Length: 199
Image (tube, rainbow, N blue to C red; front, side, top):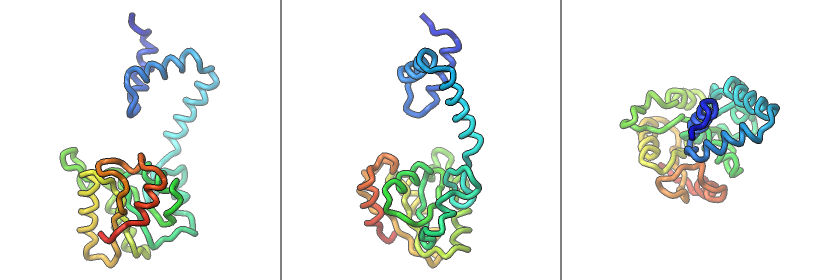
């Protein structure tokens, strides 16, 4: 027996989320249709539309915000002599949850991956170079993932910054090689930041 078309379409939409397979999508769709009240459905759809319309990259660090400049870049109590370079905005949230780091961030929106057509021009690197030219940055902390792509990205940034008078460090990894920062617990992230090394 086939699902009605409208339900099948809803299942297909849920399957677009990462990690959501057919069975999970079916559960989400059934719950939405059978258990959610119309008011909750309206709230959910409005929240989704609102987030899509209002959330944008910060004009300085590329972290997600609903303003022109994110709260971290706008915070005068942060240490602006340090910039931590990360692959994704999810990594910023992970580091912030650890409560250890009080510097600034720069989100690349990816990592170098020539096989997937991602070169330096596809990442937010030009804006990083500009920040280093005008800001009083003394340390760049490379916190890309311990994957092949993350390591290649860190090596590339290190090479470019060789001629710049700035300390380049790499976070120490208690994070397993091949894993992403978003899956690390707070204590592991704390140790990784504390044990960063000159790169």
